[in-house]
Every structure is written in C-alpha cells, then in structure tokens.
Length: 284
Length: 152
Image 1 (spheres, chains in turn cyan, blue):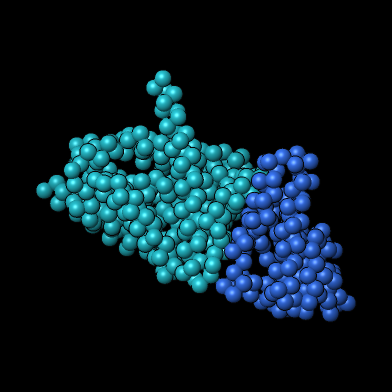
Image 2 (cartoon, one colour):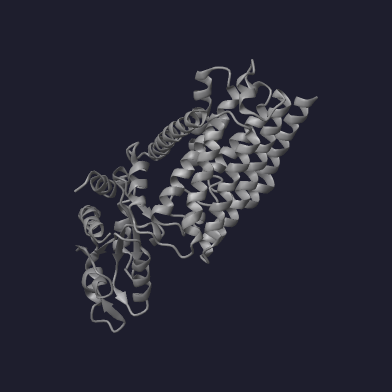
C-alpha cells in the first residue's frame, strides 16, 4: 500500500511540475518579449513546441543521443520526487548531477564542434552549480544536524537570516542552471548563438523535446531548493522563488554573455568564497 | 483524424521554427527576411523562432540564386532537417535565378536542387509578402504531417 501511495505522489508531483515548469518557461519568454517592447508568444507556447518536437522524425548520429535524453529526464524526475518526499539533499544532488552527465555524454558523442564545445562548457557550468549546492547541503547539516529536507521545514525561523551570502551564491547557481545571460555559455534559449545551441545542437526532434521537459523539471528543482531559504510560511515559499526567477530574467535581458573563464575565475570564485565564509560564521 | 493527430497538427501550426539560408543573395531579401523578426512584426507572437540549426528547423527559407559552389550546402541543409519539413524560396533569384539566371556560375532557382513548397516573388520580397509565404508554409507543414502519419 505504501508503494502505491508513493507512486501516486510521484506521478502527481511530476505532472504538476511539468505543467508549472512549462508555464514558467512561457512566462520567461513573454517577460523577455515585453522587456524588448514586443508582445511575445502565449504562455502555453513551450507546450506546443514540445508536442511538435515529440512528433518529429528521429534523427541520430550516435545511439547515445537517443539514450541520453531519457536518462537526463529520468534523473531530473527522480531528483524532484525525492525532494518532494523530503529526502536526503545529498542524494538529490547526486541524482540530479547524473542527468547533467548524460546530457554532456550525448553531446560529446557527436563530432560537431558546436556540440563538443557546448559539452565542455556544460561541464564547467555543472562544476559551478554543484559545488555551491553542496555548500548549501553543508549549511543544512550545520543548522539542522541532518541532510534531509524535512529538517529545514521544522526550523522556527527562515534560513535566509543565517545564510544571506549563501543565498547570493544560490542566485548565481540559479542563473547558470537556467542558462541565462551572463552565463548562457553551454546552450542558450535564444536559438541564434555563436555556438548555435551549444550542448543541444545535435539533439533533434523528440530527443530535444525530452531534454526541454527535463530542463523544466531541473528549474523546478532549483526553485524548490530556493524555497527552503524561507520555509517558515507558505506565502514566502512561493514568493521567494518567484522573485528569484524574475530577477534572473531581468538580469538575462540587461547583461551580455561572459566567457567561461570569467564565470569560473571571478564569478564562481567570489560567490564560493562568500558562501564558505557564511558556513564558517554559521559554525562559529 | 484522431485526437492525437489533431493535437500534433495544432502544435505544428503554433510552433514553426525557421532556418534562413542565404544561398548567394545580394542581401536585399535577407534584410527583408530578418526585418520580419524585428519587434515591429514580432513573429514570435505566433510561435515562430529563427533557429540557426537545420536539426531544429521545420521551415527552410532560402534567398538568392543557387550556384555550383553552394548547391551542395543547400542540399545538405535540407537533408539535415528532420521530417516533416517545408521549403520557401524567397525573391526573384530564389525562384528562377532572377537577373543572374544566364550567368555561367549560376545553376538557377532553389527548385533545381531541392523541392520547393512555397514561392515568394519580389526583388526584394517585402516583409509582408514573406510573412504571407510563411503562413502558407505553416499550413503546408501541417498538411505534410498527414502524409507522414500515413507512412508511419
């Protein structure tokens, strides 16, 4: 019976997250259009894109390109379900990272220089995101004595009070994860780039559709983690991720792309140092 | 037609992704094509995205004459687009070779190399005419899905 219940919860979570993730992606495109004095597509646009992609012909140059999107989607879905079941944050992060590795593996399986460079940059981006999230997991352990998500929800006051610098680092990670300027290095949402679509270049049709859904779920996971920073009341748990999402989109429209060297050497180094400092004062 | 086919047809109509290829044009038609993508016309309202990758494209917009140098590039781009796909030839040169049709290096219009579905005349073609052509192409894109569905 317990297994049935978990399965029902998992399905409901994935259904809701896909719907919400797609709508957020539509909101992103609409907001971006408005910031550029355009009307922009309807909110449901991402769903039409994905349905169209799923119904296109399958084209692969290497079998990995067919397998990788499925693995990436499965990893993102598993990580999200584990989060909603209030599981161990370390496990969630490891599962989520597996999906990223498969995405890169599929991109690297093609000899296309765009895809290869996109794959390389995706690895740098993963390095940036994962390390910061592991620091967050460390902070979780220092404040609650466990890596479990359920521990945060039991806290009497918001984590943001004690982890302001870590929240800044998290916003950096969110920008990198959402593939937004100035860190849309590996594969931007705007389809006309110096690397074509970078890590996504060689994925076509249904495979690209699956990766798009996986990306929605990954963004939802990040926003869910964002809500942990103010987990004492429901309104804040919704408003804080929404504000972070809006800030990232505004930043996307006012910033130009930076190089991966800047992202790693200055951006990541600075926020990592700040986050580490935050951990030390938490301990002391 | 089943519900799923109807849904796919609607999705195709609402999400046509374009690939623009300058096949030796004088840039006149290219400027007009790119003008369609400016905020004035804002074709993203209709789900149109200008992609830089044949693998992601549904509709191929070709401007300019085909010559012996770039005919292969054109054929490869077309081949790399997953089915269903639609080709739109833009401008007098894309249609027939235009004023360059007698030149020794010119093969002729786009349809000498790949099958063309929509012809947009003009020298250069106006953005409004190009948008009309793309609207027709979107309809053909949806119709092609029926043929593809039967082959499945």
